[in-house]
Image 1 (tube, rainbow, N blue to C red):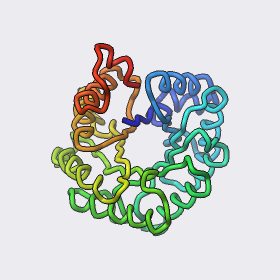
Image 2 (cartoon, one colour):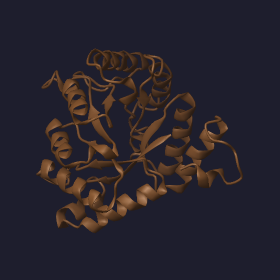
Image 3 (cartoon, helix red, strand yellow):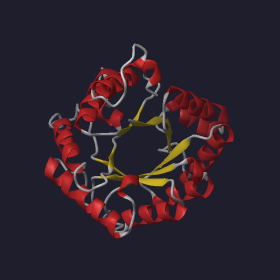
Length: 270
């Protein structure tokens, strides 16, 4: 399971304050802690923490890279912010460009731009795409799979290796009215998306979106992630500092025979 650490995000108060204060230490400690906990990539998301999102993305990337050589996930639907991050990130460490919908009302070519940027940046640069188009987030399984099929088709047309393509079926908060059916719709979509091409695309998700506003966030997140792993998800943006979540991932992978059992399997998985 490829886990992307979620904590360097301007939506978190400590990160927002660190951006305002230009306090690199907070960012660097979060980077080191997440890598130690098992993150394969570190998500870097300015969020709404700064008016200058391009400059702040560069500041975050540079702050991390001063003390940590982790793979980074540049996270923004604004392509200019992604471009800014690409100017300073070290592509040799591995980079994810997150996240592009199939298209937007104001930009029909947004996915083309993400794919072309990844191709130009180097062989270790991959793309996370959303099962979302100019009509918004689909509410059923079939629409998610149809958009995913278009994404795969576009990647193949451009000669982009589908093993460097991550598809996110978009998790919605479970406590929103009429949204409780969505987790099952997403699981069904995951099962179908992995058969769209060979080699299959990776399947990822912003896990914490599921539990926003709920009283049992960690429990909801870890149970659903285990369910998603069983359906074929092989990546997720998560709180790797949540020990119970990480234990659930390790156990799910062991029970699916993706990790060899030993009495210390929780310690050796990541």
